[in-house]
Image 1 (cartoon, rainbow, N blue to C red):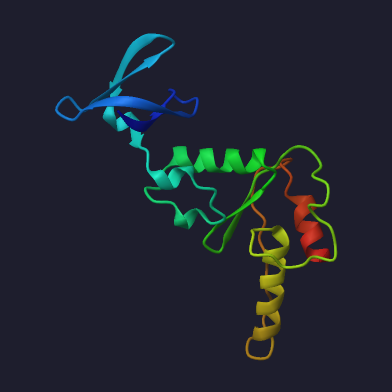
Image 2 (image 1 turned 60 degrees about the vertical axis):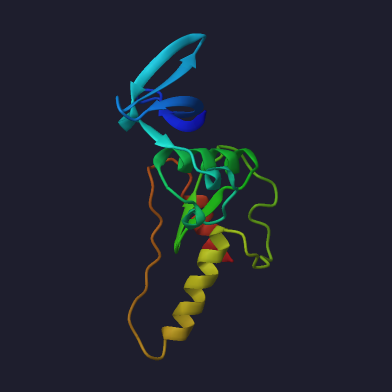
Length: 158
C-alpha cells in the first residue's frame, strides 16, 4: 500500500495507507472501520522527505500544504518555532512562554531563529551603508494578535 496525504474536507490532512486506482483516478482507504473512496485530486502522494525535520522547507521534495503543515506541527511540538523557507523565516506562535528562547547574548546557530534574521539584516546594513545610503526596512507579517510584536522587538534589541 502506498501512503497519501488525504484531505479531511477543509479540516486539514491525514497521512493514510491507501489503494490507488489510476484508471478511476481514486484512492481507497478505511476511516473509522468503513471503506472510503475519494478522488485522487483530493490527495497528495507521500514522499520520504516529508518525514524529515527540516530547518529549511526547501529541502523537502514534492512540497505541498499537507507535509508543510505536518512539519510545522512537529516542530512546534518539539518547541522549534522557527523554520526557514529560503530567506524567509516562518514563525509559529506557541501561545506560551518558551524559557530561553530569547536569551541574550545570542550565539548564532545554524538553526532558524528570529535573531538570525536580525543578524543578517544588521550585517547587510553595515555592508551596504557606504555604497547605498538609503533607508532599510524589516517586515514582520502576520495576523493581528498572533505574536509578531514580541519576537520582532527582541530581535531589534539583540
